[in-house]
Structure formats: C-alpha cells, structure tokens
Length: 464
Image 1: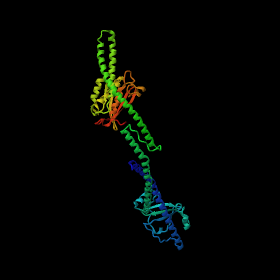
Image 2: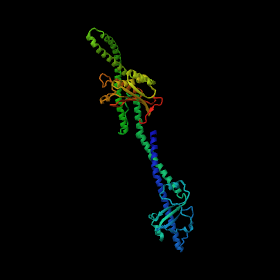
Image 3: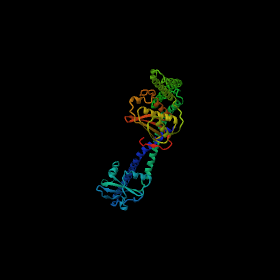
C-alpha cells in the first residue's frame, strides 16, 4: 500500500479514536451512575425485605441477619423533611457517612476505572429515581412513600470490575469500528486517488524527459479531479511542444542573425572609416551631413552589439565569488550615477553575467532619467533578495506590460533588450526578476535568487 494511503489510514484512525474518547469519557460517567443506581435499588429492596421481616416478628428494631461490613455497600435513608430514617442495619452500624460524590462525576468514574479510590464514598439518589422503573418497590412496605433521599455508601473501587469490563467492551468496539472504516477508506483512496496520481506523475515525468513524445491515453473516464488534472497536463504538454517548436525555429533564426550580425559589424566598421573621412571633406554639404551619417552608423553598431548580447545570453553559468563593492564601483564609473549599496561583501554568482544583469538595470534606470540608485541585498526563507530602486519617473501601464519583452521599449530609439537580457540571466541563476513597485517617487526591481548565493549572514527582514 502506498505511503499516502497509510498516512490517511493513520489520520482516519486517530480521528475516530479522538472522537470515541470524547464519547467514551462521558459514557463512563453515565455507566458509573447507572451501576450505582442499580445497587441503590438493590439495597433499598433489601431494606424493605428486612423491614417486612421485622414487622412480621413484631420487632420495631428491624433486626436483620445482614451484618454491616466496610467491604460491602449499604444505604442510609432520609425522609421528606431531611430527617434520618432507620435502615435495616443502622442500629448496628455506627460508622459515619463518608464524603459525598456527585453521581455524574467524570473524575470519580475515572478513578474507579483505574482502581485509585482509597476511601468509601456516598452518593445520593431520590426515591423517584429508584422507583420510576420499578413500581414493585412501592408495594413492599408502607413507609416507602416517606423516604426522600437514599444515600448509597460504597466501599473503595466498588465499581472497578464492572467499569473496566465496560471500558474494554467499548475499546474492542472502537477498534472494530476503526478496522471497518479506516481500512476500506485506505483501499478506496489507494484505488481511486493514489493509483491515478501515480499514472499522472509518471506521465509528467515522461513529459519532462521527452517533451515531444505524445502523452499516453488516460484510462479513467469518470470526470474526477484527477481527470481534470490530466487534461490540464495534456493541454500544457501540447502548448509546451508548440512553444518549444517555435523556440527551435527562433534559435535557428538567431544563429542566422548572429552570422549576419557578425558580417554587418564588419561592414559597419568599414563604413565608420569612410564616415570619418567625410568630416575632412572640403565640401560644406558633405561636412554638414557627416555627423548624421556617423550617428546612424554608431546606432547601428550599438544595435548589432545588443542583438548579439541578447542572442548569446547563456543557459549555463559558472559560479564563483563576486566582489560586490568592485561591481558597484565599476558601475559608478561607467554610468556616472550615485549608487548606494547595503548588503554582503561577496555574492556567489557568474561574475560576467551578473555584472551584465546589474549594469543593464542601472543603465535602464539612468536612461529613464534616474540620478540615484539604491541596491539592498537580504535573505528571506530559502531565497536571497536583491532590491534595485531608483528615483526615476513612474512607468506607465504600457511600459509595464512590455517591460521584459525585447524590441518593445517605450522609449524612442531604445531596443528594450536590456531588461530581457537581465531576466534571462536571472533565470539562468535559477532566480527571477520582476518589477516590485513604481510610482512618482521611483521604481524598484526585485531580483530573487537561491539562498546559497550568500555564504555569510546577510541582512534579514521579518516582514517577508
């Protein structure tokens, strides 16, 4: 049987046992009361017999052959005015009445079950309780109607044997109920849930190994939630196969573009040499047009570099120690920005790719007119979080929708590749990059990486 089914059986058994305990404890008290009530009836019956014998003998002392004993139960009687009445061996029993106990006391029933009672105890019963189901008691003697309260005096652990027998009968019944409920429940779960889940897991595992293989036919057709999950997996597989096919096409196109880009850069390099000579021309019209040509060529070179960087974003990374203060200093020098850093001295990442990631974010912020950047590194749970915030303007909804889409920048003349490359590098580090907030006071990006990126203790925040 699967571990899940076994766990469910254990849970079901525990629930049944707990529920039975809540039922058993009050029932022990009720059983204890019923047994004591029956004993009080029996003792009252003996009292009436002894009284009748005394009347027939003409003896008003109610002499009885029953000798009082501390190991046997006995009764004392009180009339309707709470005055003592003689019982069948009261005159021979000078023992004082012990401490009274409530007939519904759970603790007293429990001590009786465990055999922990050390002294006799007394319980009071009204005559109505004793005679309502036994009308013959009234016929036994003339003074029965004068009795108000019957006090049963029981020796220690008087009820232990009976209540233990009751307890074990209930316990056996509970375990029989557990077997009748939990085992069939586990078998049903194994058949209807665990086995379909195993087939679903096997399908997902096969899909992970070979995404282009078709999913096997599903055997269940009962429209259960497992069937819905399998349908969702099949739909995901078809969509993933389509996306992978498109990505393969894009990969082939990327290789072709990279080769064309390489040749284009050579052409542009030659064009730069020619454009530099245009500035030395004696023709004023050529001299006036030369800066425009040079600007266009430089933008084309930058575009080629960005396109090549986008295509060459790696999937495999080389983890090593990165000195963060050195990275921040290099970004300050190249971008001329006020950058504040709060975090550990070292991070364990791919040095070159991580520099590209941070530099692209900072460069994007500068192009959005930000003048001050704050970088904070901290840990939460099993993640390392890097917040990069600036004092730039708020991003509009269109810019937010196209934020990480290449070639869809909201700024004129920009390619929108920088943030896309940054997110790809984050994914290569098994992390993620997203926009966490944007307002008139600035914009913040949150980079979430694995916990082991920081080897030493870092700043921690309790609210995440």
